[in-house]
Amino acid sequence: MSDERVFMKGNHAVCEGAYRAGCKAYFGYPITPQNETTEYMSAHIWEHGGVFIQSESEIAAINMVMGASAAGFRAMTSSSSPGISLKQEGISYIAMMELPMLVMNVVRCGSGLGNIAPHQGDYFQATRGGGHGDYRMITLAPNSVQEMAQFAYDGLALADKWRNPAMILTDGTIGQMMEPVDFSPMPWMEAPDKSEWRLDEFQEGRERHVLSSIYLDPADMAVAHEKLIAKYERLTAEEVRYTDFMADDAEVLVVAIGSPSRVVRSAVRQLRADGHKVGLFRPITVWPYPYEQIREYAKNKHVKAIVVAEMNWGQMVEDVKLAVLEEKPIHFIAKHGGLTFTPDDLTEPILQILKNPENPSTLWDAVRS
Amino acid sequence: MDTKVINGTEYEVVYSRPDSLTAKPFTYCPGCNHGTTHKIIAEVIDELGIKHRCIGMAAVGCSVFSYEFFDFDFISVPHGRALATATGVKRVRPNAVLLSYQGDGDLAAIGTAETIHACNRGESITCIFVNNAIYGMTGGQMAPTTLLGMKTTTSPLGRDAKRIGWPIKVSEMLSQLPGAAYIARVSMHDAKHILKAKAAIKKAFRAQLENRGFSMVEVLSNCNVNWRMEPSDAVKFVETEMVKDFPLGVYKDCWAEEKAAAGKADKEGAE
Image (tube, rainbow over all chains, first blue to last red):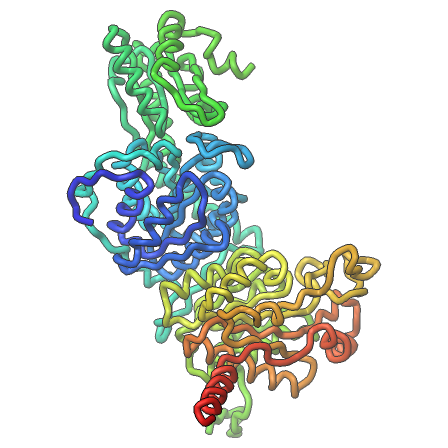
C-alpha cells in the first residue's frame, strides 16, 4: 500500500502501522470484534517478509509471539477481551523475560462471554499488568483509525526501546469504524539489533543466550524485580502521553479515553456553543498514567470539578482519584452493557455539575458509598 | 587421538562430557533417566554438528532447569506451551534447530492442544517427550500417562479408568497426523535400549534437518522417588509393566513410508 491518505478500518490500519514498524510475525485466533486484523495479516504480512499463523488458541498465539520475539523479531498478536484473558499467562512470562512485543485488545463487553459491543471493562486488566506477578505493560489507548496505525507503529518501537510488552487498548467502535489514515508520520523502519540477547542459529564464537523467568532464590528474584521496577520508574518519567481539547480555561474537565473521548469532544463543543467552560483531557498512555498532568489541571482555581466518562462500572476513575485526591470533586458517568454514549448522556449531567460541583447524583464518592 | 596429562602421565581420552552439555552437574534424583536422556541428546547434537544452531525449550516439570545443562541458546517457557513457543522461533528462524524437551504432564495434559497442532502443522521441530507416568517436580501426582492401578498422591487407591480414564498414548495419536515425520517410543531401562533411544533421537533431528515435519521421541523413563520404589525396581517396572501400555517402536517414519511408496510405484510400473 502506498504512503498516501487511505480510507481504512481501524482493525486494518493497525496492521499497516505494524508493517511500517518492521513487524515480521503475527499470530492470532478468531474472535469478534477484531477478526479484520487477523484476516488482513493473513493476506498481507507475507508481502513484508513476515510470517502468519492462525493458532489453535489465544494461548498458543501469545506463546508463538514469545518465540518470535525471543528470536529477535518484531512480533504481535491481537484479540478481544475473553481472548486477552487467555493470553495473560504468556504476557506475564514475556514481561518477566523482558521480551518486546505488541498485543492489541479490541475490548468488547464482558464479563464472561458478554457481547461483541464496545466496552472498556478491561482497563484494570491492561493497566495493572493482567496476569500473575508484579509487572506493567506500556498501554496506548487510541481514539481514531489514524491512532490505531500510529500506536501499532509506536507500540512496537516502545516495546523494543524498553524491552517490555506493549498493548493497544482500544474498543469495538475504534476497531470497526472507517476513517482516512495518513501514513506519512510512519516511515518504514526495521527492528533494532538484538544480537546481544536474542536466540538464533549464529552461536559460534559467542556465549549462549538464555531467556528465563525463573529465580528460585528469593534474593535473586528481588534483584530481578528491582531491575524491572527501576525500568518502570524511568518509563513512567519519560513516556507519559496525553492530549486535551478546550481544557485551558475549563471549569469542568472531562477525562475519557477511546471512543467515549470522541463523544466527550462533541459534548464539549455543544456546551461551549452555549457558553459553558468545559474541556476534555485524554490520556493516551493509560500505563504509565498522566497522574501529574491531571493533578496540575485539578489544582487550577477555575476548575470546579473533574468528570470521568467510561463504558464500565468505574475503573479509570480510580486513577483519576489517585491524581486529583481531595483537590476537587470527582464525578463519574457510566455506560454499561455495550451501549455507547451520546452527547446528551454527557451534557445533561455536566450542566448539573456546573450548577453544583458536589451534585450527589454523579459524585464518585457518593456513588461509591 | 585426544590425550590428557594427569600427574605427569599421558592418558588417552576415551570418554568425556559431550560438547553440547555444560559443566554443571545434573541435579536430577539418583536413578532418574533425565541425565542419561540429556546426555544422548547432547551426543546426537555433537555428532550432527548442529550445536551452534540449536535453540532449546525448557518446559515446566522436573526438566525446568534443562537450560542449565544444555550448552546452547534456551528459553524457559510456560507449562505446556513449549511447542507453541518453538513454532514462533522456527517460523522466523527456519535455519535454527529446535529442541523441545517436555514431560508427560506438560505435553500430554496441559499442553495437549499445542502438541497436537504443532504436529498437525508439520512444524520442523524435534520434541523429546519424557514419559515417566507421574508428575515428579510437584511431588508424585497422577499424570495423564499414569498406568491403571498405579498409586499416586492424587490416585491413592490406584488409577481407576472409570473415574479418570486411561493412560494416554501420545505416540499412537500423533502418528495419525500427516504433519508427523518421525514418531518413535523408546525406553531407558537398559544399555541396549538407551542406544536404540539415541538412534531414534538422531533420526528425529535428521527429520528436522531435512525439513520433513514434526518429529518426536517418546522416552519411557522412571521416577523411583515418586513411584516409591528402589531405583533397580523402578527400572524393572519400566521394562516389564510400562512397555505393556506403551509398546516400544517406530510409529511414523517418513523415510520408510517414502521407500514403501516408491517400491509400490515401481511394482505398479512393472506390471
